[in-house]
Length: 85
Image 1: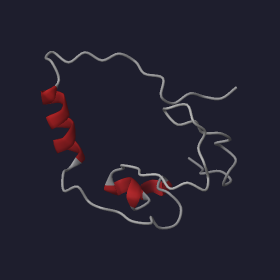
Image 2: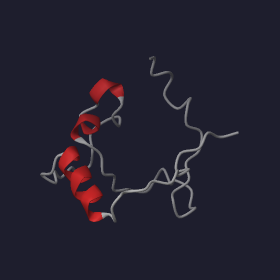
Image 3: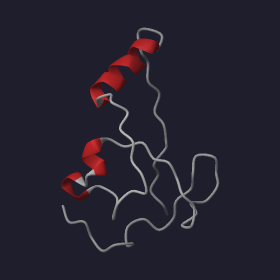
């Protein structure tokens, strides 16, 4: 898989609250350590302003979350990521 040319794939971002992504703003992002360290070229460019480990593995967090839900767990599809026209 080729990473392509920087800036050539994502042309616009809209936040969950409907506001457009602001290049001059600072955002908090929760990602796993694989992504933070640029695993497979999928991380963010440069270095983060700050990073803070939460001392929970991804699997531990997922298990705790699933246990907190009414059982059996049901999932409905979400359209959080959409291809642009």
